[in-house]
View 1 (cartoon, helix red, strand yellow):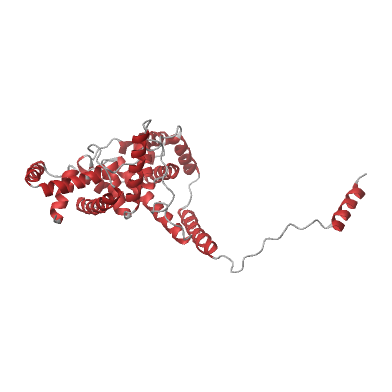
View 2 (cartoon, each protein chain N blue to C red; view 1 turned 135 degrees about the vertical axis):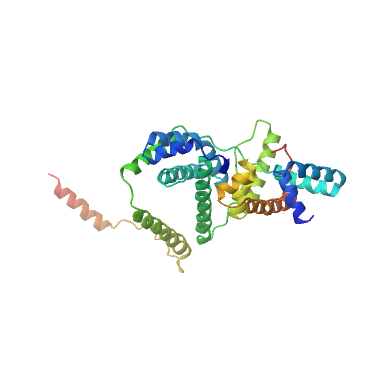
Length: 134
Length: 200
C-alpha cells in the first residue's frame, strides 16, 4: 500500500475524508479485497485502543483551586521568585537524583553494632541525678 | 469549533476572571474540570498526578486570563495549557528516571499496570484489562507529539482541525503525526493482538 492510500484510509477511518471521496474509496474496497483487508487491519488497531475509565472529580475540587487562586491574588509572587524556585528545583533534582543517587560509596561503610552502654558513664549519670534530687 | 466560532461565552467569564472575580473562576473550573482531568489522566496515566496537573493548569489559566486573546473556544485554550503542562511533566519524569538509572514502568518487563475492574463478568473484565494494558504500552512507546495527537483524536474525540488548534500546529501536521502513530500501533497490534470493538 502506498503512503497516499494509507493516509486516505486513515482519513476515512477518522471520518475526515470528504463524503464523495469516501464513497469512491468504499466502492474501490468492494472491488479490491487487499485494500479492504488493509482498511480492516487499520480499523482493528484503531478501535482496539482502549483506556480505563478515568477517576471521578473529587467533591470540592473547584473550590480548592479557587482558594489557591485567591491566596495567589492576595500575595502575588514576583516573577523572579518563581524563576529562582524553578531553577532551584531543577538543580536539586539533578544533584539529588544524578549525583547523590549514583555515587554509591566505593567501600560501603559497615553498620556499627549497637554498642553496650558504657557502665561507668551510666553510673556517673545516675549518681548526678541522685545528687540533684532533694 | 475554532475560527468560525469566535464568540464562546466562556471568554466573558474569563474576562471576569482577569478582573479578579474568583467566583467566575470557580464556575470556569466547574465547567471544564471533568474533561480537563480526563485529558490529564489519559496523558499522564495516573489519577493522582492528573489531579495535581489539572489544578496547575487551572491556576495557570487564572494567571494568564488577562493576557489571552479571545479566539476559538475556551476549552481549546485550556486543553493547550493542559497538553503542554502534561508533556512537560512526562519529559521531567523521563529525565528523573534517566538520572536515577531507573527503567520506564511502561516498558516491557516492568510491573504490570493495574486498572480497576471493568465489570462483573470476569471474562470481559479480563479482556478489557488486557486491552487497557496493551493500549497503555503502545501509547507509552510513542514520541510525545504523536501521543498527544492520538489521545486528542482517539480518546477526546477531537477532529484534526480541533487537535491542530489545541496543539498550535497545522492540520497536515496532525495528520502526519497520526499516520505515524497509527502505523506504529498497527505494527504493535499485530504482535499484541488488538481486537475490534464497535465504532468510534
